[in-house]
Image (tube, rainbow, N blue to C red):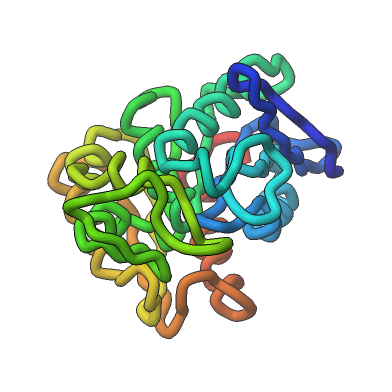
Length: 259
C-alpha cells in the first residue's frame, strides 16, 4: 500500500508517502534522500522494506531538490540544518501515530540524507533505535571549507549570499552552516545501533569518509556494522542495490525484534 502523508513545520508543509503491507509489523522506517534529489531515490528501499513488514515513510525535504513536493526553495532556503528540522518534524509526526511502534524507530539516509540522519540520531539519542547510513555525504563540511561542493565553487573565506549558478545556485547559508563543523564529533554522540554502507568507486563522497565514521563509532563503543560494496559508485543501482539490500535485510534480521 502507498498512501500520502503530510506534516507541518511552522508554515511549511512536508509531503511524502507511507509504504507498507496491510499486516505490517508497525515498526517505522523514515528514509531521507540526498542533495538535489527527492523521495524517488529512497522509494526502492522503502518498497523492499515494506515487503519485510516495515512501515516505511519517504518524503521530500523542504527545498531539497529540483522536483520536490514539499514547500521551500532549493535556491533560497535549503541547508543541511533546515533538513535536520524537516526530519525531526517527520519523526514527531510518526511518534504521534498510535498505530506505529515508534520506540523501534529506524532512520535510513542516503548521501546528504545520511549526513542529516546522523546528526538527528546524535541529537535524539534513544528515540532512534537503529541508524542505516547509505553512502552518507560526510564530506559536506570539508567541501564547504574547500569552497567546492560538487559543481558549486566559491571562496570559502568570503561566502556570498548565494553560491553556484543557474539551477545549481544555493544560499550561502548552506556552506556557512557547516564550515566549522566536525561531523565525526557530532555523530559519535549516538550510541544506538548503526549499519554503514559505501561503494568503493564513489567519486562524489570518498568511501574513506565512511571508514573514518566507522572508526569514530567504534571508538565510543557504538555497535557499527560496516560494509564496502566493491565497484559501486554514488547511488546503488542494479546489482549494487541488490547487494546493499542484502546487507540491510541481514542487519535488520539480526538487530530488530518482532520480524
